[in-house]
Image (tube, rainbow, N blue to C red; front, top):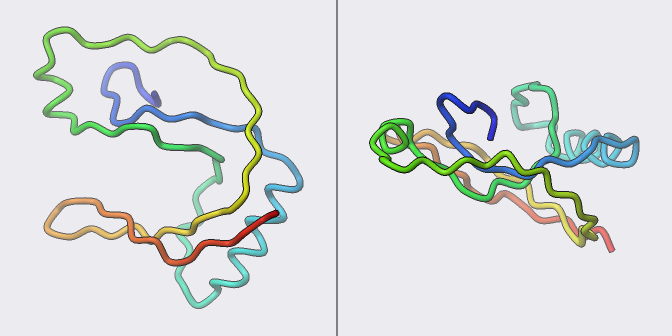
Length: 100
């Protein structure tokens, strides 16, 4: 979780590598017609999301402070567009790229 006080999601983060950075650059180049938000890239997998209002209403809030370590082979990368419709965030898949 990014913030213990006001968490929004549970995610697994990965370590950045030169291979991953080069893959990101290739994807950005392939999608150069799209506007990039240029945030710091943090490789991650989102496991769950929760609205702040729902989190605040929970009586028994879970505590997730455990570090998990594992290696997973990635077979493809999916590129999503982040859309805001009627105040709600939605992620639309644009394309998938096989890696193996």
